[in-house]
Each structure stands twice: as C-alpha cells, then as structure tokens.
Image (tube, rainbow, N blue to C red):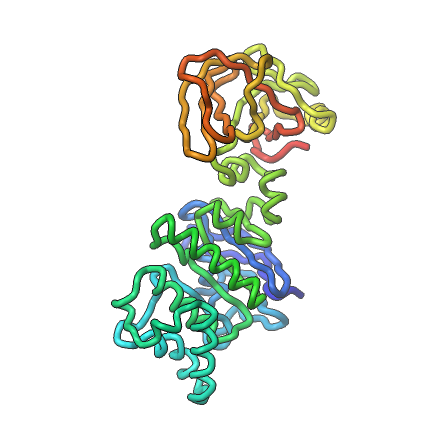
Length: 354
C-alpha cells in the first residue's frame, strides 16, 4: 500500500453527492495535486484526508493505517491553509512552535525545530515579529514553517497561494517546490490554478463534479488528455476545439478534411459517434506559406510570446507563437500543423479517441 490510499471515497450531503467514488494512490515522497474548478470536490476530499470531515463511504489509508474515521490529531499530518491561520497574539517563533508545544515536546527540541525551520525558510530575522507586522508572503512562510516543524507523514496544502499577488505567487511556488525537494515529505496540494498543478505536481488528479477525470503525470495529462474537459482545463491559452463530422476513418468540417494519424484512423473506424471533437493546442499551429487559409482577427502580444486569433473556414483558431508577431489584423495567413498534434474526442461521451 502507498503512502496515501483513497479507495472508492464518496461524500453526500443529503441527496447531493459531492464526491462520486474517488480512487487515488500515491507513493512516499510524491507530490499530488488535486486540481479543478470551484465546486469540483477537491477541497472536500482534502478535508477528509485531514480528518475535518468523514466520507459517506469508502476508506482512506495513510501508510498502513486506516484513518477514515480518526480525528486529525491522530493522523500525523500537517496542514497549510489558504488563510494562513496564524495566532495574532503570538510572535513568529511561538506560532511555529505551537503545535509542538501542544504535543508536550521539550522546550529545547522546540527551539531547535524553530531555528531549523526558520533557516530553511529564510525567516530567522522575523522570529520576534507578530503576524500583523508581516507581509502576505512572510505570513505564508510562517504557516509553512509551523507545518514543517512537525515532521509529519503527510503535508496538506489548501490553495495556499490564492491570497498572494501574481509576482509573489511565482516566488512562493518555487519555494514550495524547493521545500519538497529538500524534505521529500508526501504532499497533497489543492489548487484551481493549472500552472501551479503543472509546475509542482509529480502526479495530478484533475477533478470535475466529484469525479477524477484523469490521474497521471503532468506530461501525460498535457500530451494525452483523457477527456475534452481535461484538454480544455489544462493549458493556456485553452486548446482549440472543433466539432467535426466523422466519415468512417476520416473527419471533416464545412467540407474541409482535417488530417489525422494512422492510429486515429483506426479509432475513428471503430467509433460509433457521428460527431467528433478535433482539438489542437495553440502552440501546435504555425504560420506558413500554404495550408489552411484564414485572416488575422486579433493579436495579443505578451512579451515573450504572442497569441493570435485566426478566422478560418473551420472556425476561429488561437495560435501561440514565440516573440512578437509582425503582422496586422486583417492580414491573410495560412496555418499548418502535424496530424500527430491533433486530439480526438467522442462528441457524445467527451472521452479521448485513440
């Protein structure tokens, strides 16, 4: 059994089922991301791992122990909340040591743990300050330090960066990644931010409406999304999606045939759906001298890259190109892509074909 095993966990509040049979297992030292839109059930699942709520059915094991109905204090976990949850009347050192003090850890050990954690998080000079004297990033470091001082079996993070500005989020994301590389503690991290999910996770569980749509590595999820939802949710800008007609082992839209691979032809021949979703990531498209004709509808420079919306005979397509695009709205262009860069989904079930 892995470091964390979630087996057929369901949660219902009256007639409303929030979690619909969650199965996840991770090994010791892994960094698991639970990602999805608001209301998908990711925070509810984290609460049950933490012991703040109990499943309607199913089981949760941490290591070999069944903790499904154990209180939080008996689970050997440490949790970092979105709101930091620091005691305003205590200084930084006291906040970090509080959990150890509650467990009757001797003062000398507590002091040593505070110094170790403060050095790791580079907050040694802040130990005498109160939370009200700290910035948002510093408070988040203190909240992480309180968890680190525990040396737990499992770290739980509940959207810890949501209250920070964009620049600080990037910095703290790097801090958390480095922290995990140093400590190798098994970690479960909840976020709605797909950039956090892709950059931090060893494996990602993409959730929608209480169901895990895909549980895989970041590379697998990006390269071979299991459903149309995963394909649209992971990646920025979002994947282009075209609803096309299936004709045996071929697909077309508005009379234009779209290229597919040999593997996709086999999958199309076996499919029963009349319509297929044809997906293309923006970076898979490139401007060329020939190919699908279109007209530049909108240009969005971001500095290192440019997003361009191209109006074509098959619909509007978003293209991501490096650097600055030296073209103008209204210019005639052509788009090309490799068949192997396309993704096919059943239009009815929204499941991946091939």
